[in-house]
Length: 360
Image 1: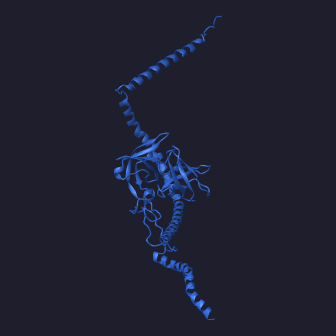
Image 2: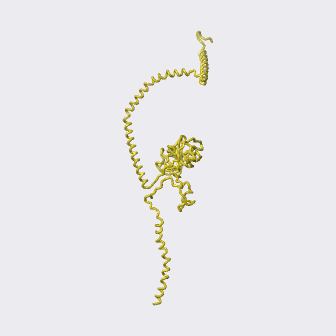
Image 3: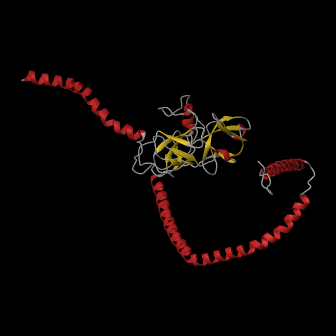
């Protein structure tokens, strides 16, 4: 069908659009390839141009931003001026509350010290073997341990507890001449006797090769709360009592969980402590028998690592001495000997009775 006079075919614009789109795609591909080549090459063609553009744009941006900075500073000043009174009052109330807490703390501390002196209670002080740097640690699925640069030559032995500034880290399990290996408390084989500082409930903090600890064998008592602090209880004699261990994070369930205070993955310096248990209990061969000697004979017994009170405790009577005990036993012996002498007295009086009867 012939076209009207002055009309053009309608497919020409579509054909031009198709042609231009293909040309644009080719140009973009070539530009991307050129940029990749320039990026990988050692020659930076656009470095000078980029630096010049940045040097020219930076002052303009700084000048454009200055008014906004002035407005921000002015608004902060006005806000702090109106809020300074309320903040001052809050700080005064906080200061009064902290002073009351400090006063109660000092009173309780002094009373506790006097009661301990009255009862003759002596608390052992932790005996530090030395400090060491962590030189390596493993955080695998089966073993979590760390290596320190102290060994047998420095007095390190198996079973000694290890801590850092935040809390308990673990205990020594292998000792070399100049190094030792520590079993971290998050290891699957780790078991730490702990107690809840607020309620005095006892439990076993078990490692799970994870970032948290599992609380097992929890003693009955008040319910746990998130944020309760766990410290070592001293049970077993290895870990001194009172060392911070963890914070309760999940108090619900049959086996609550706690987060260790010492970060096992960020250890730097640690302190090695001596076990809390006395020497005579650590080595049973040095224990006293019933007659006051050791199994191998009378020999010197190692002194415990804590001071022993010289005076007896109030209300406790001392044991009687041997002379007093023998004097107390004399009346019983006299009473026992009287029946034995009675037949002899009767036999001595028998002839007198027979003579009296014959004269009659």
